[in-house]
Amino acid sequence: MGFLKSFFGFRGFKIGNKDKMTLPLEVIILSLPFLGFWFVFFWFTKAYTTPATWILCVVTGLIYAFGVVAVYRQLQKFSFFRVLKYRRMLRFFLEENGYVTEKKSKNKDAKRKLKYVETFFSYKDRAYIVTFGLKGNKHQQKLLKISGDLEITFSLDMIDMIDETGYINYKFMSGLLDNVLKSSEIAGTPKGGLQLMKDVVWDYIGNPHLMIAGGTGGGKTVLMRSMLIGLLKYSVVDILDPKQSDFVPLNEIPVLKDRIFSETLEMGQRLIDVKSFMDQRYGQMRKLSKAKKEKQMEAFHTYGLKPYFIMVDEFPSFMSAVEDELGFKMGRSAEERAPISSMEVMSAIKQIILKGRQAGIFMIIATQNIKSDDIPTTIRDNIMTRVTVGRLSNTSYDILFPNSNKNFKYIKEIDGRRVFGMGYYGVNGESPRQFLSPQMPPAKDFTFWDAYEAMPRLELETEEDVVVSYTKQEFAEKLGIHPRTLGEITKLLVDREFELSKELNDGDLSLFERIVAFKNQTKSTWQEAVVNEVGEKFSVVED
Image 1 (tube, rainbow, N blue to C red):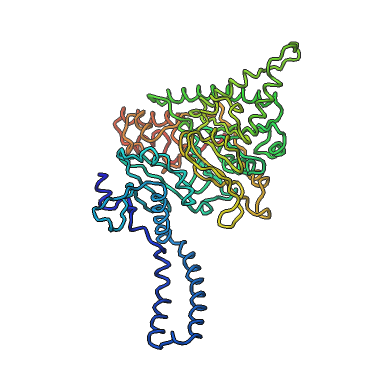
Image 2: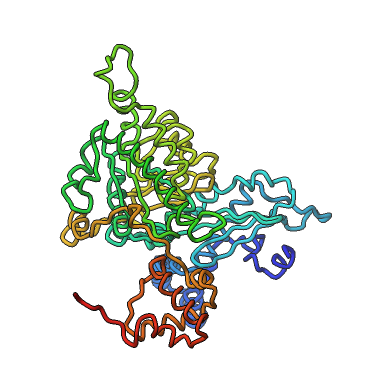
């Protein structure tokens, strides 16, 4: 199959000697009209004998040359011409870095021919794909680590690396600004994740928990506040703010009232309470799973439970305060000791990180430049999603994205436009990609305060709130009837103005069981069974 793809060009253009040319093809094509005009003009008018004509030729030639350059730059906006340019750049890269061998010829005067390592270049869905054939060649190890060098060569961002038998594919993307969202546009769903860019979704169920790293002024706080815009629409969020600065004022807004904690003792106690709530939620889920007779327990959203996020700003600072104020210290009397210990808080954090995913409880921790001892390894390794914004040290990148071939760089401008919140997004163990955090709309049109004030306050479900709901297939199986029959009964009830729940649950089960039982015992029709239970027209009788 690999041979067929290669032979018929399914992998894209094969890079080789044909891509070597002194001038870009576009420049040659654009120059032809000028050259043709002056050739005809000189030949038929014999103008080459006049000095003034030579001066005119040089001046107009320079003007035309500037025009060709301007048009050439505009042509780069079109994918066809960009592909031509990148093919030439890739050919030059391969030759300069020794990914070629010279074909030997018996004729000493023969033109030098080079054989390039098997390389293909293609463009699809706004992405550029470079494919290398491996098959055990001498360049194999270098080709597996070439992505960073290609990023620099193309000035593009590598977003994916795809392995297949005999080939390695590197996928690059441009147009970062086209994918950025405004803070007011951030949205998500309980089971679909939170959208951070048009083409970036934090899948917190598949890759639970999030670590945000950003230097001073890098845009970390704006990113976190933008995320709140999306999360508060369908989930509950608690915020721990040890600096007592960026989030504490939001405690006055109804949607976040009593959900922002800043004192060390109350922050530690909150995490312990969250761990207890997680254990309680698992008990609810086991109960619901058993009621639905499932072979194994599903994720939280299957049972109608809301996601629950705990956002911790300046996590290393919080950890230091917990150790200092809640840790065991020699010489402290029993009265001086805190009611909770740092060990209890650390245990709660680890349990939430390790077990929270299925119960729908997720942590978002933020820090500045990160050192290896800032966050315990057990916690760091189980935070699957990482985001950086602004300027970070090389050490921070190595800790957040280990074993990555990425050439991390701090970018202030893109295409002449100043950008804020520029960084990288990635999943632990995968190659990161460039990321641009949501941008603030104009102040006259939007403020975070106004956006939060407009949001309804959601509450976490208590045990009494949780009811067992069923799909139509599951409900029909419990009744021992066909789903089409269930639909027929439902229509008969609706025709008689009987209001059913949006989702079939245990509250509806007894009614349907009585209808089915009457039908089976009397051998009547379904219409007669429904009429016997609710009458010809259902109505509420007031006392």
